[in-house]
Amino acid sequence: MSARILDGQALADRMQQEIRPDVAAFTARHGRPPALGILLVGDDPASQVYVRNKVRAGTEAGFRVDLERIPETATLNDVLAAVERLNQSPVHDGILVQAPLPKGMGSGAQQRVFDTIAAAKDVDGFGAESAGLLSQNRPQLVACTPAGIIELLEREKIRIAGRHAVVIGRSDIVGKPMAMLLLHRDATVTICHSKTPNLAEVCRLGDILVAAVGKAGLVRKDFVKPGAVVIDVAINRVTDRAVAASLYPEGHKRLATFDAKGSILVGDVHPEVAEVAGALTPVPGGVGPLTITMLMHNTLRAAKARMGEVAST
Amino acid sequence: MSARILDGQALADRMQQEIRPDVAAFTARHGRPPALGILLVGDDPASQVYVRNKVRAGTEAGFRVDLERIPETATLNDVLAAVERLNQSPVHDGILVQAPLPKGMGSGAQQRVFDTIAAAKDVDGFGAESAGLLSQNRPQLVACTPAGIIELLEREKIRIAGRHAVVIGRSDIVGKPMAMLLLHRDATVTICHSKTPNLAEVCRLGDILVAAVGKAGLVRKDFVKPGAVVIDVAINRVTDRAVAASLYPEGHKRLATFDAKGSILVGDVHPEVAEVAGALTPVPGGVGPLTITMLMHNTLRAAKARMGEVAST
Image 1 (cartoon, each protein chain N blue to C red):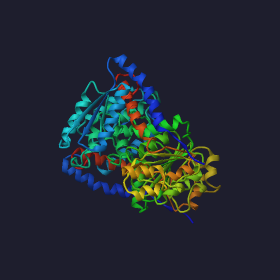
Image 2 (image 1 turned 90 degrees about the horizontal axis):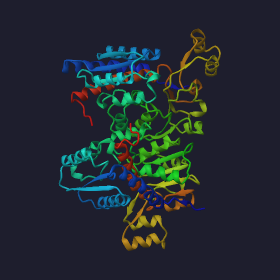
Image 3 (image 1 turned 120 degrees about the vertical axis):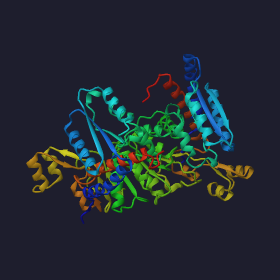
Image 4 (image 1 turned 90 degrees about the vertical axis):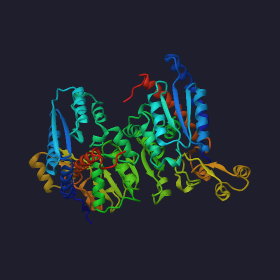
């Protein structure tokens, strides 16, 4: 038995195609495209890649995407002022501040910035109001990764209602919003985490198991109820060959990739899980591509709401 | 074996005593007492009782409590205007609008009113921002009933971290905030509800089991892991003698009460659970009294925050 692979990349491509005529129609109706303002602070290499992908995906779909770079040496107040300008901007419907902010800004800086984004433009869904509206089952702009997972489950016709969903990880950007989305679709939901003593046993309760921890190969076969749907959210860069070799047998093509490049990207789910799961998202190419697609979805939604086209609270 | 009874009334009385000197000290520091404004719309008899208890508890503890009655015939806009006046009031630190609003105001009225309350004065914790801050583990003003349950667990030295907590019910005012509070104290948390197919089995996972459904006697012995801590949140008025007789054997004093009064108040937890649980809150006299106490706690907290005495986000 080998798990069905849930191809997030293919779905993301399809959704990108689907949104394009909607974006074009919006542009025709309003004489301007829906617009996203992105703030990128500092020079973090991973952030550069993420932002480049967001700009490209948005532009290709017909959005206006404005990237404002803020130097590493800027103060928190500089960033807050840039957010305020975008809040006031008549052009911009959505605002995204790429995380992480430079460490020098302090530990509370990131949440302070997220909270400064006007709720109506909070396309990442990280502000307190967005999180509260989701928790109260009247979501407006929902964090993109968990929203993308729901989209994947629904399009793959995986039933959520009446099933037991287990989420490993309790972050504000994946674990908790994921739990709320599943709960509001009538799943029984268990949230476990680093302080859960009997993790494998609890995970085995899950008809749907979502791993969002950031620990390569954490989820082994004995974590998975036979036939369960396993969603692997993490993208871990493995640079230790021993870790890579604990995931793949000698001779496997991904080990060859490791030997050629010095690193590979893997999820939280050990490859052996494919032997017991009913369906499984790969890493890379599973959940990751859907995140950007949902960002586009949120930006269009925010634009429509701002133009009075969809109900907002 | 018979469960230890967790006496919420005794704890509430003790906490009322504890808060009094804090309220007096605040009053001395600022030349005015911390103040709560309550809006009571219409003539619902239960609401009249609840509000009277809140006014009395607050006044006894040294708060200023202003009750504004709004007639049943008022419009939603009248209520929103009253909330806005309290938002702007320099005197009032906390605002509470007693639920439910008259049905004629429509289904969305209540949440609209809650959202209109300024987050800094949202002492019931029902607004979107309060819920979001709780979900993101930076709580400001937390819904009183789940906050009271945490207080009870902590004062009774019941360990939360590392244990499995099961919450039955997913309401915005108890189930979901309860789950967040337990999660952030390092419990593994399961939320189940009316669409959970194997409810007894899931509940039996709980080292701590919180029932917040509103269905008399729902939680039977087979729902409870032996030795578990069982928290009964509901207050159900039973008016059907057959239901009362399904809870208590003939000759029990509570059946005699039923026969004398025509009704009794019971929780979601069947009395037989006392044979298996390790500890149990009674109804009445368990969680109920703590709710008002936490309202006082929240009002004092809001007052201190408004005067710059405690950190707020």
